[in-house]
Length: 627
Image (cartoon, rainbow, N blue to C red; front, side, top):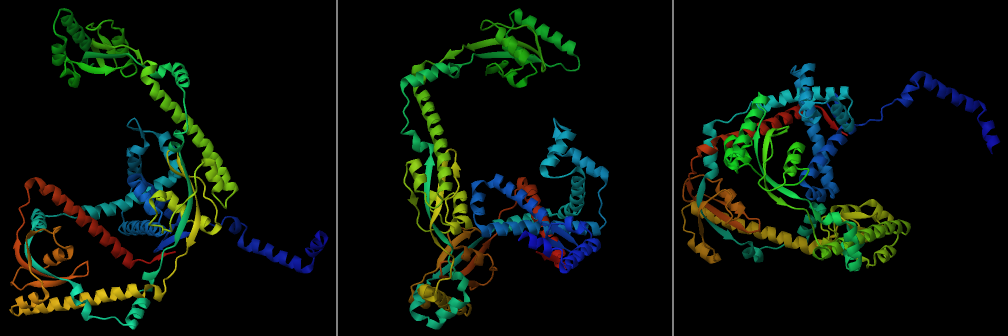
């Protein structure tokens, strides 16, 4: 066979094809084959592109920020692929907005000099060590972020140029004090109202739904009847707490551990001291002489606490007579510590001691000698510690073996459960946003709905639920996403349409009541026929909890006028209400202490709105293509 291949490659047709390949290299260039860019664009904004790499970097940065800020709450959201897609789209929209602002800044002729860029980099705290710019730290941080120095300078130039325009937009807004006062008064305004509620159920007997209505609704809202994919999980769970009960530790073992680790049960000597601190100041020799003079006063019988309060530069301890509370070795300046622990008796006073903070005079006020806790006092703690250590060792050994078996026998969890000495448990069917409590962990739900576990029907890898707590899962049953048939949902649709038509009938009736009131007709009998009464509320605020939000919203849209001024509104529960405005109560005056804060808040809101509208306007005029 090999011989026939060799002969074939030497034929006329093979030579012709080889010649064409050589010509393509000559005309196109070898570089076009090996140097062509593999980078793809995520979007194009006018003549500039946003690469997939830029999008991925921005996406990971934003995701990391959200995870650090919101923790498990955000992790639960990211288990939903639809949310992640929306989140990623939001990041891309922000990058497009930044690109549009950048292009607008260039069109306006805004520039940033090299000196400004250097000054900004030097001032960034990320590149500072001990308050000063550190070049090694700068290069290390850039390497970690995937930047070369020239790339980062270019990035800074673009960012600072863009910020010139965005800061100008944000900084150009302002709010007058009169506007702030008026906004506050409107926000604090209350209203007196009366309203009546018309239950939709009163009209259900007067409406009907045909089969064609049901069919038309089904076709018009067919996506509403799409089911979510569902799984039932088989799982094995193991934690250290499961193992503790079966571990025994004898008293002899505990005593042996105690003797081998006696230092863990020994407390350090603690000392309490007071001091007088004289800082070096401009004249160190003068400061030392002042400390010597104070020491002489102490030796002559003057009160240490009074002298500390009068002369010590450590103002916090001086208020307490120089008291520094309890400390052990390693907590104080070495020179101070050596002098304090050299004092033999309570009440002894040191000579003048120099430290990096200045000159000290130290008085020993109390001593707690080193103590060793007897075994009897710590026996239970030692036993608990040994149990925990052994349970942890057993946990890690079992976890490792369980992971191996889960991989080696991927079609069952029985052997995994046998190692853990537990039963395989099974959940009910659930969707991605309705996991049972036992498996309601973001990383469990994410794996449960992964293609690997659903399509390949294999065991998961070890899933860590917390410290020393793991789970292995597999999909026991699966139901794909589908659209329910008309027969399955016809009763549901019938109820929906009945409720809609009943609400519409209630609304029509309420509008006739309003019309009669506006015509100055007495509607008392009409209301009594339905058993409906007016209800009144005084001083309702914009977020009044005692009435429906729909009523409050309608109430604050009404203008103060005739008694018959009103509006019919649909309530969230399917009923209808007729709302009347009785009186507008002016809000309180803006407290002067809150004026500046509210003025700044309103200005910030306006600035953000203006910036958003500016970006929207640029986008409408731009040629934006998302790939």
